[in-house]
Image 1 (cartoon, helix red, strand yellow):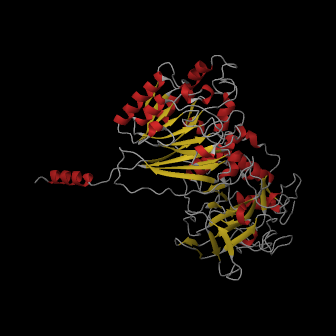
Image 2 (tube, helix red, strand yellow; image 1 turned 90 degrees about the vertical axis):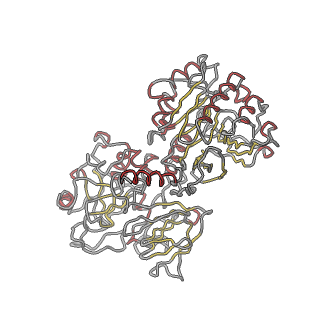
Image 3 (cartoon, rainbow, N blue to C red; image 1 turned 180 degrees about the vertical axis):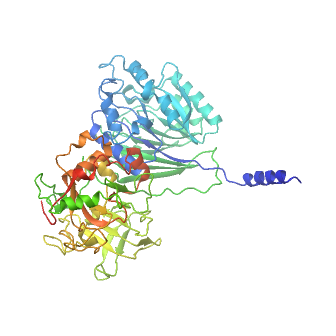
Length: 627
């Protein structure tokens, strides 16, 4: 037989036994902001922190409070973008709520909506193409208000059900369009359909509305429908809709989620109409993995409040094993600002005054920084996008609901003096040789870092060192002057909270504490180290002692340097608080970033982001100075 033919036959045979790919993606659902844009801003930042790869966001209504106003919609858009920290507006798909449709304020609200979301950068159909979706369709006469599209193995259908949130606004003409649309999606082999509009199909709080037979009939006749997502009622609720609750759904149950407080305030739950309900500002993250769907509901602090998993779909390949989502770092609990460790008067949290004393060897240290043989003429970033992530900051947030581990390092923290801390499942140390991982655990009032860390599926093991600092303390190592908590110990006096740039702080727009920077090489020519450090690595071939702080000169106008938004946030912290030289990088002077390459790339941060601020714009504070 011809050799090429043999190879072709072999390849075809192999292909027949390759399992079909199981689609896997995450989308977001949250609605009802009205005037609560600060809450929406925080939610957006939290979404990007927890689900940086989310593909789209369905938003079923009440963007604004008094009718759809094109002149002020930019306020809502800015909040969707996390106050300018991200670009989630480019993946959001809204439908109208009763407040958006209030004709008392804007008589042409419907036409204004169609015009706005049907053109230019706001075009919903253009967004579908941009996210990799397909098969955009919109109902005649309700252009860009009732619409649908496909993404991966799923179909999304948004409906202009606005009248007081009453689902009976979906008239026969609309339900006929829905029927045709869902039939077409089903015929294209889509596994799931997710429907979204403002008022719930089945009310769960104090509102009242009949469940319209025409809508129920459409759902019952299309097994592709997996779940519906709604707002209007300012609660976070899940209801399993079967024949016991909606007679027309006997034998064709669906899952209903109401996630309706993205800033609008809380309502109350009707316990008899829900399987789960709480009241908090929050969002839902929906993981679609082949036939498996998991809905996770988070509050504005990012805490996981509820999880619902179910299997659905007749058009889904089932031969590929289910992907287990890897837990990401848990978030900080924001209150308008990112969480800050230690007391307000802590050394780490106190800015330097403009007239802080400058070190007598400042010129010599700056010249060392400018020596191109061992560093670049700016402060770089370890774990920046496009660079190795092996030595970035592996950062996690433990909660009381996470497993509690007992840690020892055989040095300071022994079996007689262990550390007990909550660490979320799925947490992983950095992949580099240091094997470091940092964990904030507010429930036990501490922040810890392990080096040489490993997890065997049951216990954490520490091959090098363990550091622990109490969050309610002043953050000084118990071995140095001024410390107020004997439990603080580790990393020669630099707490884990200072060791890297956190995503949530940059997204919040302010880093309100001193950071640690990693020098190309430190030295001990004049002094081994300065307070507040309790030790040092000895001479590494450089001249800058550990414990020295360098800052951007107060006279530098940061706004005029053309810095990117994230770089400006970091530069402001470096100007106000400075960074303490606490460790060696081996190559180049750097700050360490929290490991999340995709998120930093989305923010626009690069390794060279601070290059507009050369070392001539910096100065070294007098060693050992306390502001």
